[in-house]
Image 1 (tube, rainbow, N blue to C red):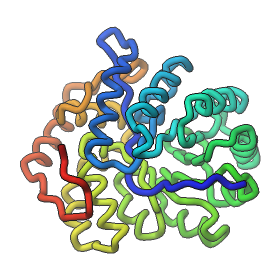
Image 2 (image 1 turned 90 degrees about the vertical axis):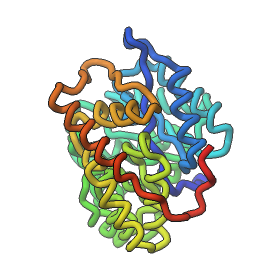
Image 3 (image 1 turned 45 degrees about the vertical axis):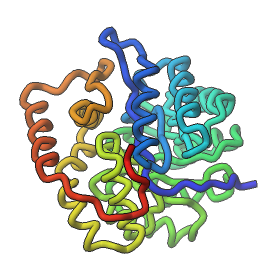
Length: 309
């Protein structure tokens, strides 16, 4: 039976916090999550790209999942990213996620190996059939090199646990292509920050967002404006947000997002190697973008968000 889900709105790809010696700081990570839930986001994605999944040991991933489930306390869904080298490793992690009791998994293609389309599909099919958790298929070819095209997704309609598709290629036409192939079989999520308005306009029901870690209320407001068709208001906010949203499309997106989060007092900029701190000129560029954004931070239209604590 196809799992019932209520996934829509902004799901920040939550950062994982580390101490100065690069050990996992689970208390600081939970604090980041608490701030996001307090500020009205619609869900949490943990152990995604921005959460530095591939830099975490399995035991650490479990700790992060447990912290998210505790913080969310049923108020918002918690989805855990799964990024592993082999299909079996992904199944093992999915089983750990089920033990914790998260609300779903965000499944990436098998890492490192550049698979053929039928191999990519087989990976998603095999993992999805090994879990009862709802599965969000994650496509991010610029980062993970394997392209999960609408043609690949269309072969997975019989996999009942696959309920959602996250598109991070930047090609918003794929939402339409997929819907033309399989109708409304899958909930569709935008996965690249700087095409979110366009993604919603062509059918995205949710947004896995990087920069909403630093600006959760702005992110949720932008998304809700788009979903309501209030595009004149959305465009004003989108234009203000866009220089920061572009950071989500850079190879060093994690360092950039964490620095913005740090400037906002919501977390630290520390990342685990191989991710190194931004170079001096890069850091100055991001700090200048933030200074401009904060100096012109707009008053947000009413979209039904609760008042910030």
